[in-house]
Amino acid sequence: MQTETEVIDGLTQFYRDLDSSIAVRPPDWRPEHRGAWAFGSWRMQLLATAALLLLIIGAGVLIREARLLNQTNPVTTPTPEVKAYQAMVASDVQHVAAASAPACNTTQDSSCPAAIAALTSAAQHWLDDLDRSHAPARFAPMEAEIRRNLTLILGDLNTMLVAFRAHDQQQLDAARNHGAAVDGLLQDEGNAIANAHQGTTAEYPALVRAQVSVLHDCGLCQVTISQRDADCTSDMQRCSVNLDTTLLTVEQIQVALVRAYAPDQLAGKEARLQEDLTSADAALIKMTAALNASPARVTPELASAHAALVTALSRFVSDANTI
Image 1 (cartoon, rainbow, N blue to C red):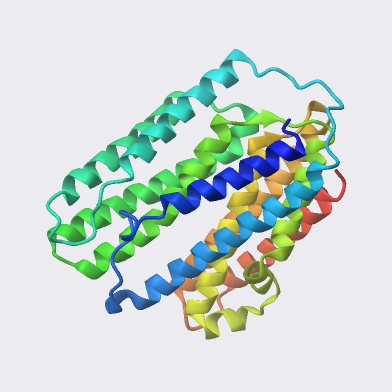
Image 2: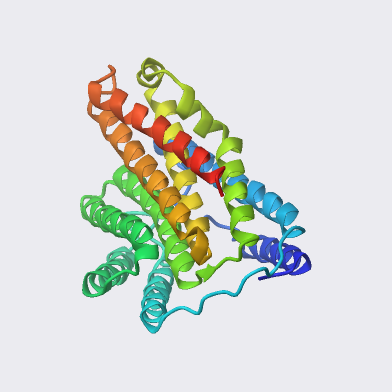
Protein backbone atom coordinates (compact mmCIF):
# COMPACT_ATOMS: atom_id res chain seq x y z
CA MET A 1 0.00 0.00 0.00
CA GLN A 2 1.36 3.43 -0.90
CA THR A 3 1.85 6.09 1.73
CA GLU A 4 0.18 9.50 1.39
CA THR A 5 3.47 11.00 0.18
CA GLU A 6 3.85 8.29 -2.46
CA VAL A 7 0.27 8.83 -3.65
CA ILE A 8 0.82 12.58 -3.99
CA ASP A 9 4.22 12.13 -5.66
CA GLY A 10 2.72 9.62 -8.08
CA LEU A 11 -0.12 11.95 -9.02
CA THR A 12 2.29 14.86 -9.43
CA GLN A 13 4.47 12.81 -11.78
CA PHE A 14 1.37 11.65 -13.68
CA TYR A 15 0.30 15.20 -14.44
CA ARG A 16 3.87 16.17 -15.41
CA ASP A 17 4.00 13.21 -17.81
CA LEU A 18 0.54 14.06 -19.13
CA ASP A 19 1.55 17.65 -19.79
CA SER A 20 4.76 16.68 -21.54
CA SER A 21 2.97 14.11 -23.71
CA ILE A 22 0.50 16.55 -25.25
CA ALA A 23 1.35 16.76 -28.94
CA VAL A 24 1.24 19.89 -31.06
CA ARG A 25 -1.07 18.14 -33.53
CA PRO A 26 -4.18 16.11 -32.63
CA PRO A 27 -3.53 12.55 -31.35
CA ASP A 28 -3.26 9.97 -34.12
CA TRP A 29 -6.62 8.40 -33.42
CA ARG A 30 -8.35 11.82 -33.46
CA PRO A 31 -9.23 13.57 -36.74
CA GLU A 32 -8.39 17.15 -37.60
CA HIS A 33 -11.05 19.74 -36.79
CA ARG A 34 -13.65 19.84 -39.56
CA GLY A 35 -17.01 21.57 -39.70
CA ALA A 36 -18.65 18.43 -41.08
CA TRP A 37 -18.34 16.67 -37.72
CA ALA A 38 -18.78 19.57 -35.34
CA PHE A 39 -21.28 17.73 -33.18
CA GLY A 40 -19.04 14.65 -32.92
CA SER A 41 -16.11 16.83 -31.91
CA TRP A 42 -18.16 18.67 -29.29
CA ARG A 43 -19.49 15.40 -27.95
CA MET A 44 -16.05 13.81 -27.72
CA GLN A 45 -14.57 16.92 -26.10
CA LEU A 46 -17.34 16.87 -23.51
CA LEU A 47 -16.74 13.20 -22.80
CA ALA A 48 -13.00 13.81 -22.53
CA THR A 49 -13.63 16.69 -20.12
CA ALA A 50 -15.94 14.49 -18.06
CA ALA A 51 -13.25 11.79 -17.91
CA LEU A 52 -10.65 14.31 -16.74
CA LEU A 53 -13.01 15.63 -14.08
CA LEU A 54 -13.60 12.09 -12.86
CA LEU A 55 -9.85 11.58 -12.58
CA ILE A 56 -9.36 14.82 -10.65
CA ILE A 57 -12.30 14.16 -8.32
CA GLY A 58 -11.18 10.60 -7.66
CA ALA A 59 -7.58 11.66 -7.06
CA GLY A 60 -8.66 14.32 -4.58
CA VAL A 61 -10.80 11.89 -2.63
CA LEU A 62 -8.07 9.27 -2.59
CA ILE A 63 -5.48 11.75 -1.31
CA ARG A 64 -7.85 12.69 1.50
CA GLU A 65 -8.53 9.06 2.32
CA ALA A 66 -4.81 8.17 2.19
CA ARG A 67 -4.38 9.78 5.62
CA LEU A 68 -6.64 7.09 7.08
CA LEU A 69 -5.04 4.05 5.53
CA ASN A 70 -3.26 1.47 7.68
CA GLN A 71 -1.93 -2.00 6.98
CA THR A 72 -4.41 -3.83 9.23
CA ASN A 73 -4.53 -7.27 7.65
CA PRO A 74 -2.25 -9.52 5.59
CA VAL A 75 -2.82 -9.44 1.84
CA THR A 76 -3.46 -12.77 0.15
CA THR A 77 -0.87 -13.78 -2.44
CA PRO A 78 -2.49 -14.36 -5.86
CA THR A 79 -2.63 -17.98 -7.02
CA PRO A 80 -0.48 -19.09 -9.98
CA GLU A 81 -3.66 -19.21 -12.11
CA VAL A 82 -4.52 -15.60 -11.26
CA LYS A 83 -0.95 -14.48 -11.96
CA ALA A 84 -1.00 -16.25 -15.32
CA TYR A 85 -4.29 -14.59 -16.26
CA GLN A 86 -2.97 -11.17 -15.27
CA ALA A 87 0.21 -11.73 -17.29
CA MET A 88 -1.84 -12.70 -20.35
CA VAL A 89 -4.01 -9.59 -20.07
CA ALA A 90 -0.94 -7.41 -19.51
CA SER A 91 0.62 -8.74 -22.72
CA ASP A 92 -2.56 -8.24 -24.73
CA VAL A 93 -3.19 -4.70 -23.52
CA GLN A 94 0.42 -3.79 -24.37
CA HIS A 95 -0.05 -5.08 -27.93
CA VAL A 96 -3.28 -3.09 -28.33
CA ALA A 97 -1.61 0.03 -26.95
CA ALA A 98 1.34 -0.36 -29.33
CA ALA A 99 -1.02 -0.76 -32.30
CA SER A 100 -3.18 2.24 -31.34
CA ALA A 101 -0.67 4.90 -32.42
CA PRO A 102 -0.67 4.95 -36.26
CA ALA A 103 -2.35 7.93 -37.88
CA CYS A 104 -5.43 7.45 -40.04
CA ASN A 105 -6.78 10.99 -40.28
CA THR A 106 -7.90 11.19 -43.89
CA THR A 107 -9.07 8.97 -46.72
CA GLN A 108 -5.90 10.03 -48.57
CA ASP A 109 -3.61 8.54 -45.90
CA SER A 110 -2.04 5.53 -47.63
CA SER A 111 -0.91 4.05 -44.30
CA CYS A 112 -4.49 3.80 -43.05
CA PRO A 113 -5.31 0.20 -44.14
CA ALA A 114 -2.12 -1.17 -42.55
CA ALA A 115 -2.77 0.76 -39.34
CA ILE A 116 -6.32 -0.59 -39.16
CA ALA A 117 -5.07 -4.13 -39.83
CA ALA A 118 -2.48 -3.90 -37.02
CA LEU A 119 -4.99 -2.80 -34.39
CA THR A 120 -7.57 -5.29 -35.65
CA SER A 121 -5.03 -8.10 -35.26
CA ALA A 122 -4.09 -7.01 -31.72
CA ALA A 123 -7.73 -6.69 -30.63
CA GLN A 124 -8.71 -10.03 -32.16
CA HIS A 125 -5.71 -11.75 -30.53
CA TRP A 126 -6.83 -10.43 -27.14
CA LEU A 127 -10.34 -11.71 -27.74
CA ASP A 128 -8.96 -15.11 -28.80
CA ASP A 129 -6.83 -15.26 -25.64
CA LEU A 130 -9.92 -14.64 -23.52
CA ASP A 131 -11.72 -17.44 -25.35
CA ARG A 132 -8.85 -19.81 -24.59
CA SER A 133 -8.64 -18.90 -20.90
CA HIS A 134 -10.89 -18.94 -17.85
CA ALA A 135 -11.27 -15.66 -15.96
CA PRO A 136 -10.82 -15.81 -12.18
CA ALA A 137 -14.20 -15.12 -10.56
CA ARG A 138 -13.06 -11.73 -9.26
CA PHE A 139 -12.21 -10.55 -12.77
CA ALA A 140 -15.20 -12.09 -14.58
CA PRO A 141 -17.36 -8.91 -14.60
CA MET A 142 -14.47 -6.84 -16.00
CA GLU A 143 -13.69 -9.49 -18.60
CA ALA A 144 -17.29 -9.23 -19.81
CA GLU A 145 -16.78 -5.48 -20.29
CA ILE A 146 -13.48 -6.08 -22.09
CA ARG A 147 -15.14 -8.57 -24.44
CA ARG A 148 -17.88 -6.08 -25.25
CA ASN A 149 -15.39 -3.27 -25.87
CA LEU A 150 -13.15 -5.47 -28.03
CA THR A 151 -16.19 -6.32 -30.15
CA LEU A 152 -17.06 -2.62 -30.40
CA ILE A 153 -13.57 -1.58 -31.44
CA LEU A 154 -13.39 -4.33 -34.05
CA GLY A 155 -16.65 -3.00 -35.47
CA ASP A 156 -15.31 0.56 -35.50
CA LEU A 157 -12.14 -0.58 -37.27
CA ASN A 158 -14.15 -2.39 -39.92
CA THR A 159 -16.28 0.73 -40.43
CA MET A 160 -13.11 2.82 -40.76
CA LEU A 161 -11.78 0.50 -43.47
CA VAL A 162 -15.06 0.61 -45.39
CA ALA A 163 -15.12 4.42 -45.09
CA PHE A 164 -11.51 4.70 -46.25
CA ARG A 165 -12.17 2.60 -49.34
CA ALA A 166 -15.33 4.60 -50.12
CA HIS A 167 -13.52 7.93 -49.52
CA ASP A 168 -16.18 8.78 -46.91
CA GLN A 169 -14.35 11.21 -44.62
CA GLN A 170 -17.32 11.85 -42.33
CA GLN A 171 -17.85 8.15 -41.65
CA LEU A 172 -14.12 7.67 -41.09
CA ASP A 173 -14.09 10.50 -38.55
CA ALA A 174 -17.16 9.20 -36.71
CA ALA A 175 -15.85 5.62 -36.47
CA ARG A 176 -12.41 6.77 -35.31
CA ASN A 177 -13.91 9.11 -32.70
CA HIS A 178 -15.96 6.31 -31.20
CA GLY A 179 -13.10 3.83 -31.53
CA ALA A 180 -10.72 6.18 -29.72
CA ALA A 181 -13.04 6.42 -26.71
CA VAL A 182 -13.48 2.64 -26.58
CA ASP A 183 -9.74 2.10 -27.05
CA GLY A 184 -8.90 4.28 -24.05
CA LEU A 185 -11.44 2.55 -21.82
CA LEU A 186 -10.29 -0.88 -23.02
CA GLN A 187 -6.70 -0.13 -22.04
CA ASP A 188 -7.84 1.12 -18.61
CA GLU A 189 -9.78 -2.10 -18.07
CA GLY A 190 -6.88 -4.30 -19.14
CA ASN A 191 -4.38 -2.42 -16.99
CA ALA A 192 -6.73 -2.65 -14.01
CA ILE A 193 -6.66 -6.45 -14.22
CA ALA A 194 -2.95 -6.63 -14.99
CA ASN A 195 -2.07 -4.44 -11.98
CA ALA A 196 -4.82 -5.60 -9.62
CA HIS A 197 -3.92 -6.09 -5.98
CA GLN A 198 -5.88 -6.93 -2.88
CA GLY A 199 -6.71 -3.94 -0.70
CA THR A 200 -6.50 -3.91 3.06
CA THR A 201 -9.45 -3.61 5.44
CA ALA A 202 -8.76 0.13 5.61
CA GLU A 203 -7.91 0.75 1.97
CA TYR A 204 -10.88 -0.97 0.36
CA PRO A 205 -13.68 0.85 2.25
CA ALA A 206 -11.91 4.16 1.54
CA LEU A 207 -11.76 3.28 -2.15
CA VAL A 208 -15.46 2.40 -2.20
CA ARG A 209 -16.34 5.72 -0.56
CA ALA A 210 -14.24 7.48 -3.18
CA GLN A 211 -16.18 5.81 -6.00
CA VAL A 212 -19.53 6.78 -4.47
CA SER A 213 -18.23 10.36 -4.45
CA VAL A 214 -17.26 10.04 -8.12
CA LEU A 215 -20.81 9.00 -8.97
CA HIS A 216 -22.37 11.78 -6.88
CA ASP A 217 -20.03 14.41 -8.32
CA CYS A 218 -20.78 13.46 -11.94
CA GLY A 219 -23.32 16.12 -12.88
CA LEU A 220 -24.38 14.51 -16.17
CA CYS A 221 -24.82 11.18 -14.37
CA GLN A 222 -27.21 12.83 -11.93
CA VAL A 223 -29.13 14.31 -14.86
CA THR A 224 -29.39 10.84 -16.43
CA ILE A 225 -30.68 9.37 -13.17
CA SER A 226 -33.20 12.11 -12.39
CA GLN A 227 -34.45 13.13 -15.84
CA ARG A 228 -37.88 12.09 -17.07
CA ASP A 229 -37.89 9.77 -20.06
CA ALA A 230 -39.76 12.41 -22.09
CA ASP A 231 -36.94 14.88 -21.39
CA CYS A 232 -34.51 12.38 -22.90
CA THR A 233 -36.42 11.99 -26.16
CA SER A 234 -37.09 15.74 -26.43
CA ASP A 235 -33.34 16.42 -26.73
CA MET A 236 -31.78 13.23 -28.07
CA GLN A 237 -28.31 14.64 -28.70
CA ARG A 238 -27.88 15.95 -25.16
CA CYS A 239 -29.44 12.81 -23.71
CA SER A 240 -26.97 10.70 -25.70
CA VAL A 241 -24.07 12.67 -24.23
CA ASN A 242 -25.51 12.16 -20.74
CA LEU A 243 -25.82 8.43 -21.33
CA ASP A 244 -22.29 8.15 -22.76
CA THR A 245 -20.83 10.07 -19.81
CA THR A 246 -22.74 7.97 -17.29
CA LEU A 247 -21.59 4.77 -18.98
CA LEU A 248 -17.99 6.02 -18.91
CA THR A 249 -18.35 6.86 -15.21
CA VAL A 250 -19.83 3.48 -14.30
CA GLU A 251 -17.12 1.61 -16.18
CA GLN A 252 -14.35 3.72 -14.64
CA ILE A 253 -15.76 2.94 -11.18
CA GLN A 254 -15.64 -0.74 -12.12
CA VAL A 255 -12.01 -0.29 -13.18
CA ALA A 256 -11.10 1.29 -9.84
CA LEU A 257 -12.75 -1.49 -7.84
CA VAL A 258 -10.93 -4.15 -9.86
CA ARG A 259 -7.54 -2.48 -9.54
CA ALA A 260 -7.72 -2.66 -5.72
CA TYR A 261 -10.09 -5.50 -4.91
CA ALA A 262 -11.61 -6.39 -1.54
CA PRO A 263 -9.93 -8.27 1.30
CA ASP A 264 -11.26 -11.79 1.75
CA GLN A 265 -13.71 -10.88 4.52
CA LEU A 266 -15.40 -8.31 2.23
CA ALA A 267 -15.49 -10.48 -0.90
CA GLY A 268 -19.24 -11.08 -0.65
CA LYS A 269 -20.00 -7.37 -0.43
CA GLU A 270 -17.60 -6.69 -3.28
CA ALA A 271 -19.49 -9.17 -5.45
CA ARG A 272 -22.73 -7.27 -4.79
CA LEU A 273 -21.09 -3.99 -5.81
CA GLN A 274 -19.86 -5.52 -9.06
CA GLU A 275 -23.32 -6.97 -9.70
CA ASP A 276 -24.88 -3.53 -9.16
CA LEU A 277 -22.45 -1.87 -11.56
CA THR A 278 -22.87 -4.59 -14.18
CA SER A 279 -26.66 -4.09 -14.00
CA ALA A 280 -26.22 -0.32 -14.38
CA ASP A 281 -23.92 -0.85 -17.36
CA ALA A 282 -26.44 -3.15 -19.05
CA ALA A 283 -29.28 -0.68 -18.40
CA LEU A 284 -27.32 2.17 -19.99
CA ILE A 285 -26.60 0.09 -23.08
CA LYS A 286 -30.31 -0.76 -23.38
CA MET A 287 -31.28 2.91 -22.94
CA THR A 288 -28.92 3.94 -25.73
CA ALA A 289 -30.24 1.23 -28.05
CA ALA A 290 -33.86 2.18 -27.32
CA LEU A 291 -33.16 5.87 -27.85
CA ASN A 292 -31.43 5.22 -31.17
CA ALA A 293 -34.26 2.96 -32.33
CA SER A 294 -37.06 5.43 -31.50
CA PRO A 295 -35.56 8.90 -30.93
CA ALA A 296 -38.85 10.79 -31.16
CA ARG A 297 -40.87 9.01 -28.50
CA VAL A 298 -40.65 7.23 -25.17
CA THR A 299 -40.81 3.47 -25.63
CA PRO A 300 -41.43 0.77 -23.02
CA GLU A 301 -37.83 -0.38 -23.58
CA LEU A 302 -36.45 3.06 -22.79
CA ALA A 303 -38.64 3.49 -19.72
CA SER A 304 -37.85 0.05 -18.29
CA ALA A 305 -34.10 0.45 -18.93
CA HIS A 306 -34.14 3.84 -17.18
CA ALA A 307 -35.97 2.35 -14.20
CA ALA A 308 -33.40 -0.48 -14.08
CA LEU A 309 -30.56 2.04 -14.15
CA VAL A 310 -32.00 4.05 -11.26
CA THR A 311 -32.50 0.85 -9.25
CA ALA A 312 -28.99 -0.46 -9.96
CA LEU A 313 -27.20 2.77 -9.02
CA SER A 314 -29.36 3.25 -5.93
CA ARG A 315 -28.50 -0.29 -4.88
CA PHE A 316 -24.81 0.38 -5.54
CA VAL A 317 -24.82 3.37 -3.19
CA SER A 318 -26.78 1.43 -0.58
CA ASP A 319 -24.47 -1.59 -0.77
CA ALA A 320 -21.39 0.65 -0.68
CA ASN A 321 -22.65 2.22 2.54
CA THR A 322 -22.56 -1.20 4.24
CA ILE A 323 -18.80 -1.55 3.69
